Image 1 (cartoon, rainbow, N blue to C red):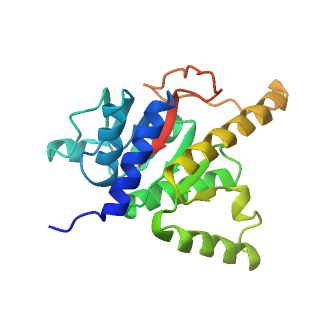
Image 2 (tube, rainbow, N blue to C red; image 1 turned 45 degrees about the horizontal axis):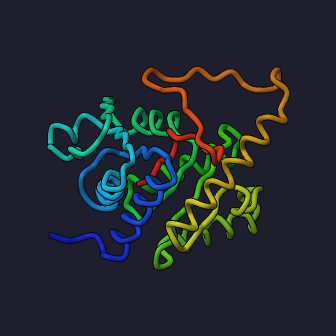
Length: 214
């Protein structure tokens, strides 16, 4: 069986630990293996709370983590509903090295932030340069007039989990400041999906329920 590289697993554990010690909650895809499982394990080991959002097909296969404080099971013919629940219930997105599912969530998040549908911090944990090609394609698209925003205005790339968490916290405060400066009648009315909870704040000003990591 092929294994996730140790560097990525270590980064995942470091991120899970950092999220827990900072007093945040971790929301992820609910899986028990790979980077996702490592984040959950480390977060729980250090007293954190983890919410998993998983498609019912993986519950049937027994792929869900048994360490979760809450498991939200979604259905659907694809991953659209799962992504919607994940994004609607987080305040920041921290992206670890991953495969097609992770890239799908990342691309959708970047598209929605870039086009103005969401104002949400996105930070890639760029362990061993994993996400450098992602930055490169965004940079090229901007230079060749395919997208109008610079990559740095949409998301950030950090080499370490600690740096990624710090960047996400800073970006979240910037988002909150922009929202506070926006007149109430100019804010779009968005209906939360069933199961979404009101986030509580800790002393850093970052919502406790809100770090999508995986």
